[in-house]
Amino acid sequence: MSELVTGEAVELELRPARLPSRALAVLIDLVVAVVVYIAVTIAVVAAAASLDDAAQMALSIAAFLLVLVGGPIAVETLSHGRSLGKLAVGLRVVRDDGGPIRFRHALVRGAIGVVEILMTFGVVACIASLVSARGRRLGDVFAGTLVVRERIPVAPSGFVPPPPPWLAGRFSELDLSAVPDGLWLGIRQYLTRMHQLDPQVGWAMAERLASDLAARTGAPAPRDVPPGAYLAAVVQERQARESRRAFGSGAAGAGTFPAVVPGPAAVGMQSGYPHPGVRPTGPVSPQPPVSYGVEAAPAPAPVVERPGVPAGESSGGPAPTVRSEGGPTSGFVPPA
Image (spheres, rainbow, N blue to C red):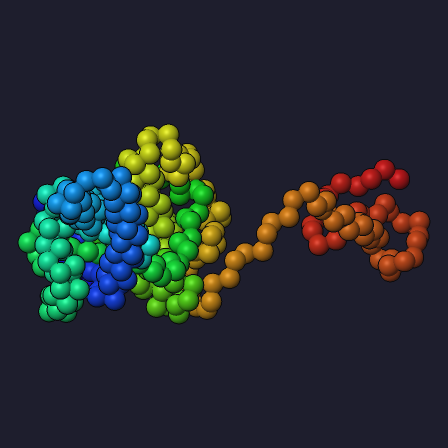
């Protein structure tokens, strides 16, 4: 990686293109330029057959400069640093500060490229690229440009679990401007791997990250919210703010739900986060779904008791006392 500093003091991590990819891009550009040059030369010779040799030579030189020199300069200027070969390989020419090139950059690169690529068959350009730490040829050095790779393989990112629904919008008033990018990265890495960690280790890590985040925001972490759920809710709030900033106030759907705080019985296990008052002692497993619409089991039949009479026998004694199974007697005597 090459760290370039922009005019706003922002470091850009760019991957400079190496000699093999640049050589392939130049070869594609040269093949296309030579084919176009041959076609233009044949057309010029056929159109200027009645002219003398000096005029034909002048037209040939003009065609050479127009196609092999002016063509690459015009293409790189109009495409902001991507010729046909660079587009096929996935490269781009940028300034030293990471910005797009302009006509003067393409002119310097094209003029010096005639000497170090066309006249020396690329030997000077190869030597300069091998010597340079960023793989730049002489044209890049004098023009203040750099050829970088646009197609960089991206590692698969883990899934960040959403916070419980009752935490949506609860942290909309937090000041997140003082939270550094390193802390955000640590929180995201924890959230993507929290189910792979040991429960005790994951809980301790979540508490440490939550305390660091609370120290940066200036507001203490709520005690009724598990640290992992707190981190996920704050990350969701940050993503919602970035979406609103990029696409407008109505584009972000996250963070627009009312903040409904449930009672202690509803906190429990939601979205895989443990209860705040109970530290995990084993792997976290989701709760079974709650079933609705199931009728309750019928109550057990009452047991009839008669004083002094065994169960199952009848006598002419006093009225029986009705007692529900498993509960105290009601004290009421039904009519005889």
